[in-house]
Amino acid sequence: MKDTGLPESGPLPRPADLSEARRVLRQEAIPAGNVQRVTLRAVEFTAICPRTGQPDFGTVTIDYAPRDQCMESKALKFYLWAYRDEGAFCEDLSARIADDVVSAIAPRGVRVTVHQAVRGGIEIVAVAERGAPPR
Picture 1 (spheres, helix red, strand yellow):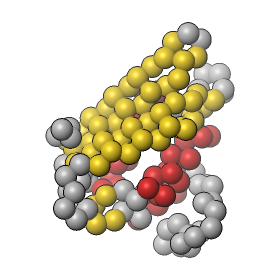
Picture 2: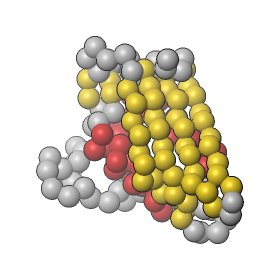
Picture 3: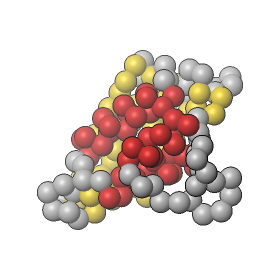
Picture 4: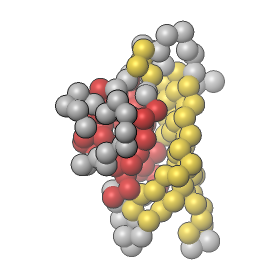
């Protein structure tokens, strides 16, 4: 990885930790242009259950109204990959991701929905909103 962000081409490197992933998400932001709403959906999201150490699988949907910047999709993949080794509950994940999106691109509003797949007969959907939620 180059010092200023992600490689221009080739395989995506694995993030060293969540702080590096947050830095890259912020660094790789792109101009918003004349876009009013962006929805990104990661359907292969994994994190670690902090109680059992087992992987939790799910989907993350990030819906936001940009101000001046948008998230670059490769940087978002890199950022979400950092959670693969991170112990976090579903409810906490939605809030942490929403806060990181606000920190990275300062949108007018963001809604993050984390849908954790069924485990032990229970599925969880957690939503975190910051600012004016996108319509």
